[in-house]
Amino acid sequence: MPDIPDKQVKRILNLISEAETNLAAAHELIYSIIGPDLSEAKKETSEEPIAGKIIEGVFDGQNMVGSDNKTYPVPANYASKSKLVQGDILKLTIGDDGAFLYKQIGPIARKQLVGTLKLENGHYFVDVNNKKLRVLLASVTYFKAKPGDQVSINVPEDDSNTEWAALEAAL
Image 1 (cartoon, rainbow, N blue to C red):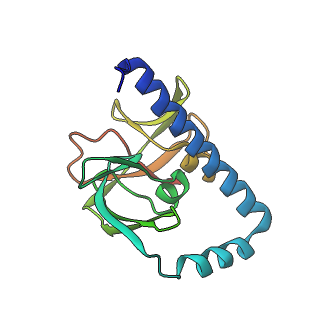
Image 2: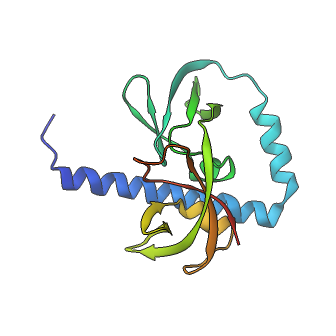
């Protein structure tokens, strides 16, 4: 395998992240148009047992780092609506058809903080006492929050190494 410069790897990961965010925004838009009919369809499909590989891992704020040390993309809309916090334990079922189904199985202790939403270099973050915590674009669009808004966020109880927060509400 050829050596790929770190810069290219980071760019590829950013492109994947942007694609997931755009997909999450599209899901939210279609839900706002179709409404409950879509959620009923989702319930029907999500209740079906899926045969396949099961992997447990830790949510890093954007992805799941599996027990196999591989990184698995967590859909931004799922992370946003479930208000996943960095450090939560997830179970991923990879179906025989290639479908990914995530389930939160171990929420970590968390606390709620209030800060100001900011946008910098195309990324949203919440400034809490001069500490910047990133938040998912899907959460920002879901709550229709804008830079400068006061927002409530969830972070791990021990937030010393936390880079990400889950948006709880726009105040």
